[in-house]
Image (cartoon, one colour):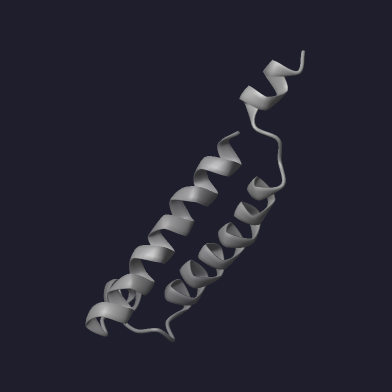
Length: 71
């Protein structure tokens, strides 16, 4: 599903951004967007958060191989 892939990409971007904050005290999103308080940065942060919430659903879905083995 395309929504799953988009969400995973955004979650990975968020994870890399948090990693750069933790390791280097450098916020890549804020740097690209001109600060944390800019509208575009806030939109990106919100999209990453929504993607993370969407990815929670992946934990509770049966995998395709599991579905195929039960047929």
